[in-house]
Amino acid sequence: MLKKEKKVNILIVEDDVFLADLYKTKFTLEGFEVYSGYDGEKGLELAKKNEPDIILLDLILPKMGGFAVLEAIKADKKLKNIPVILLTNLSQKSDVEKGLKMGAKDYLIKAHFMPSEVVAKIKKLIAEV
Image 1 (cartoon, rainbow, N blue to C red):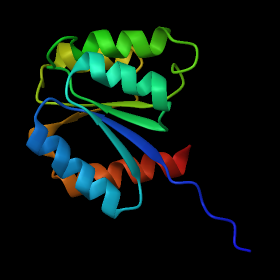
Image 2 (cartoon, rainbow, N blue to C red):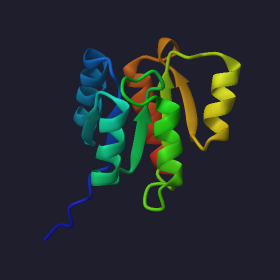
Image 3 (cartoon, one colour):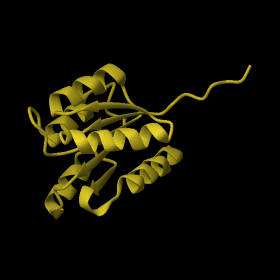
């Protein structure tokens, strides 16, 4: 019997439903198991429930901002080692530095990356782990 490879779980926390669904489709086609949260509170709830392998996190979110979500993830013993990639349109140097200092693995500016490039970057990151 062949051993079935475990799918990589990815959590996308993005309030733009169209964009979140676009990423979800791209990652699903690449063989990922994908969960989506459309606000910060739901994203954190899904992170605790599913303990994903990687989290794509927007910073501008309703109910709970991305920096607060990142802080909560990094403060949680079960979640703190999950790589978090910030995927946002906040492109000021201070935001980038803050996100990385808070423990984000990478900081991607949405306007600079096509969804296929984001998927390629995530696959590369997973290969390094």
